[in-house]
Image 1 (tube, rainbow, N blue to C red):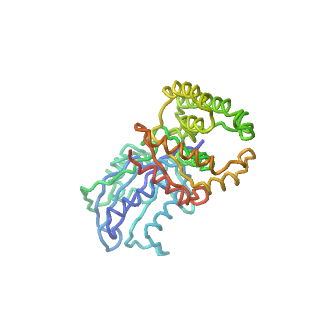
Image 2 (image 1 turned 60 degrees about the horizontal axis):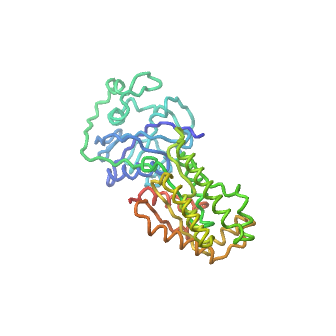
Image 3 (image 1 turned 135 degrees about the horizontal axis):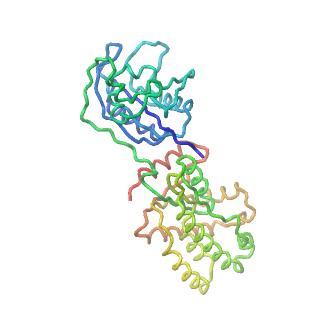
Length: 376
């Protein structure tokens, strides 16, 4: 199980659009490091230790799964990404962004690349003043005094002015949604994406138990004979699994993510069942559907048919190798009709036909960005 840790970071800039620099740094930290829990006010000070433009400074509280060594490297990468050029000199200079680790839980760290608590934080008013905004009662692990008292004892006389502009706190997925369902055609990558998101965001993952269904291999060999028992067994299993897992929320997880939604049962049944069988099946489905918790967000991954066939062949499940393009098109048409008729379901369609979110980090980040920015 991943362990969430609390770190406090100091951010400063004295070049370009300073408020925009800090906001961009916060947004990137939210994407690359962890959840931004609190943001202090922004304070203006004269440059410290050299003649230069005035600085804007703030502090943020972040919850992260990253260990300290990886955290500091991520922050250095973010500085570089935002345009900072570090030199070998130890002299102070202008900078487009500066990100320092002030505290990491209550740990004391002395390593080659990181010292925590920050060795100069108690001597810098431009650090302590914004830090008091969000961590006044937090103890300094060496001084054994809270940050508010540390500020009172700070001898720095640098003038510091609070500015009126307010920074925006990026809203994490865990605060937007309690339950996300990811759907898509056979081979669209829904299970893979659900697992990746579960790992990154510490979500409870609910995966369809298709591998345990004894009717599935038989269905692909004799569709007409095994369609009804297959669809009924899937419906019963999906209903039981979603009912049980959604009712038992894990306190150590941030939200729930599943790689299916029970309505897929009806979509597949429309394709595989005879008219009389479907009529009976629909009665059973309607009874169960009323009782199932609806997802806060329903994500449909669209893949074109050629890519689906490639993915199916690549993953190598023997019973899937004879699936035809026409069958996949029928399934997609069923999803399209479902999406068109749902008035009360928050739906996001993402075309992943040209994306490789498994091997390309930027493609994965694009999908996460779409989910975060989606509004019903």
